Length: 160
Image 1 (cartoon, helix red, strand yellow):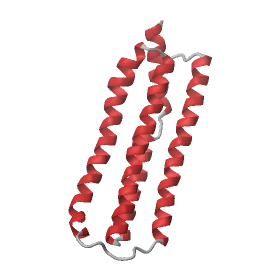
Image 2 (spheres, one colour):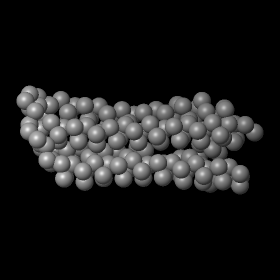
Image 3 (cartoon, one colour):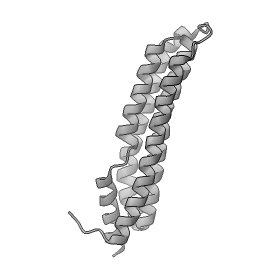
Image 4 (cartoon, helix red, strand yellow):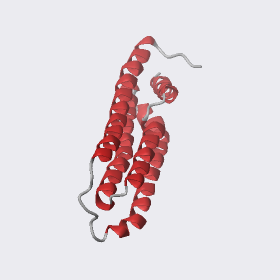
């Protein structure tokens, strides 16, 4: 365990709280999409939407992998190497950006699920995509305090 100054602890706490609230808001919107989709009855199946059953899983896998890879690459390359030299505030800004972008990518899976449900009237498949979106939100977007603290310590040590 490395020492984190009081001012850095306060900065981490404030940004971490905001990031957590943002991710929880994204989770609430995904749950709202699930609930809304349950009460919406698609008027009719769109002709040609059968082709989507082959395309949508590939799109979802690509978006999920993009969110996971983006988080890993961004965390290692951008935050821990580049932003460390810029200081603690820059590291925290990059971590917030990473959280919001990963949350947006994760929520796009839920939106694709809703669109797929409306086009094909297959609620089960849309529900699965929404649950994948929630898992992505918790895995890629939800901030990990330990990682944030390590990044801030590395930035503080680089500045010293």
